[in-house]
Structure formats: structure tokens, C-alpha cells
Image 1: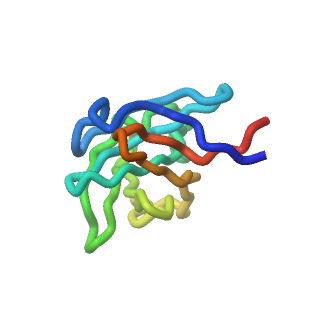
Image 2: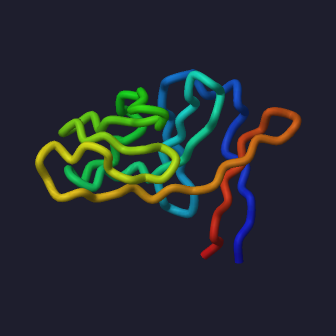
Length: 114
């Protein structure tokens, strides 16, 4: 069953910064980009195995909003989770989730209930 789960208020998210959330024992990294779009990706860095993606460096590559891992600096597209720069390693992606912001400014994630 899929449902929408409230994560936080939009005002809880700083532009160009990450924030971690815990849902059903899974860590999610949230990002608010300079244009106020919200993205959710897995918190687990697929290269280091550490839960650190919310501490990554937010930027852009072309028209893609990105996050660079704080560990080994691989760069990921926040929209798709695709690895845009694997730093010489095999490309591994991040899981992404749909996000919605309601009229009150509350941020919701589309989540599959377990």
C-alpha cells in the first residue's frame, strides 16, 4: 500500500542544504534547492556504505540539481538518483522518492507502507 507521509514543513529545510528523516526504519535525505524544489534520496551513500548523503554538497551539473557525496565526492542527480560523476568507480545510483508540498507548506513523501 502506498501513502503520503508528512516529513516536515518547507520552512524546516534550508536552501542548498540537506536534512535527514527516518521513516519505517529507513533513512531519507531531503534537499531544498535554490529554486525551492524538494528532493528525497536515500541517506545511504552507495560507495562508502555510510548514512551521510544529507551532508553532501548541493549544486548543479548542466540543468540537473545535484548532491556530491561528502565521503568520496561522487555526484548524483537529485531528480533521478543517477550517478553523474562516479570518480573512476562503477556508477551506482540513489533511490529517489516522489515529494509533494501542500498549500500549507507541509512536505510529504510518497511511501510504500510495510
